[in-house]
Length: 88
Image (cartoon, rainbow, N blue to C red; front, side, top):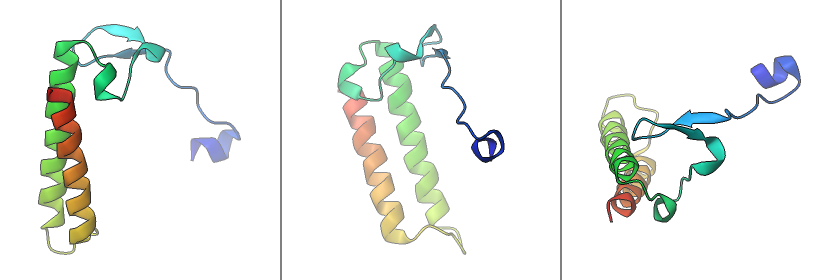
């Protein structure tokens, strides 16, 4: 909606708060588990992906859920695999 209204995409933040609570330049962060060296950040990402997997699993079992069982299973497996990559 913002992009349509302003005819421009908003800028990414220049500084973000990491899983361990420090503020770093956005360019120093990584979504790739292999590149995250901070143990606290790795643990934070591990927990967040497991929490996401549990939420998707729970939502997919609700009556009238927009998530199909096979789609939910794929998302849950992806999140658990990603969590495992952050914990190793």
